[in-house]
Length: 99
Image (tube, rainbow, N blue to C red; front, side):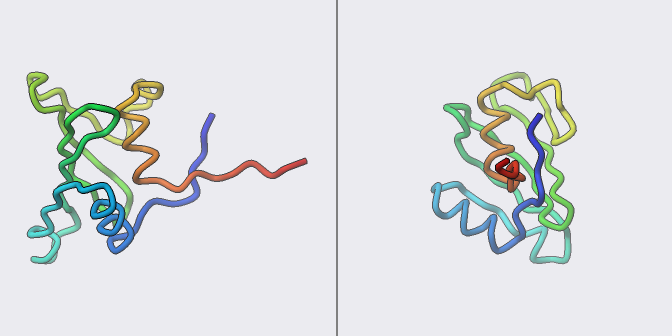
């Protein structure tokens, strides 16, 4: 089971999105909210999600899929390419100590 030690902060996620060419809407955050909206391609799947850099939570939907929603709490999606790509993008994995 993978473990994570942290999630991306606001500046980190904006830089990561810029590096991937993702569209980011920070209007809500700029007005004092906790969320930014990210639109990009994760493992060949077009995804729109809202992300809170304050607590690392996200919620989103898969456009064109009858608005199939998902969040960071959807452990049953582990192993789904696009979901794993989101997790890998937003979280910092805890590396196992070498024996």
